[in-house]
Image (cartoon, rainbow, N blue to C red; front, top):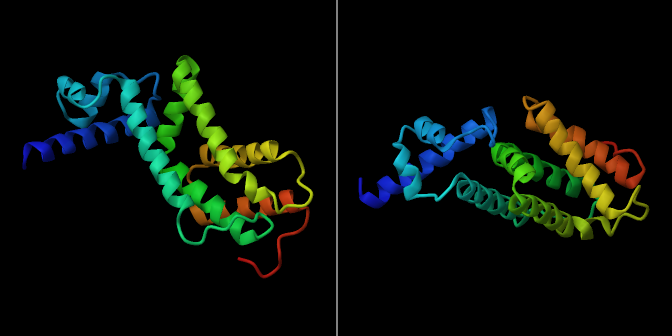
Length: 195
């Protein structure tokens, strides 16, 4: 294994260890020495890749953002929330990305409590999500609330379900949320015959 491959392997091991610990212990309760021990690496190896736990979280956030952007650019994306399939696509993408990156999102929310930079990062992330989806609501004639409130309710519902019921199968979560969102936004029953 080359030196570059070893470095990449160590960096990946540190990131995976951090995600496991953030998921079980929380970001604020995890120390760098615990991350290196979990990764099976020396304590000094951490600083060859990151200057701080905050920088490691920034790397995790970059991975999360890339995954989110990839889902938004995938085939099948529709921008009309009067179409149940457009809602289903977005719910499924949101669910999948947020489940895969749950430790990162938990870490960001916890870091935002004590770090103004991360509080701004969380705020910018939420704002960019809303900005990306605002035009999806333009087709809905009588929103139950403002676009911002409607999107906040949608995001909160998905996040809460994912946190409170993490073992729910993805297909079931997507189905339930899609039906709720369609009915809430459009004020009518979910079309018969749709899966």
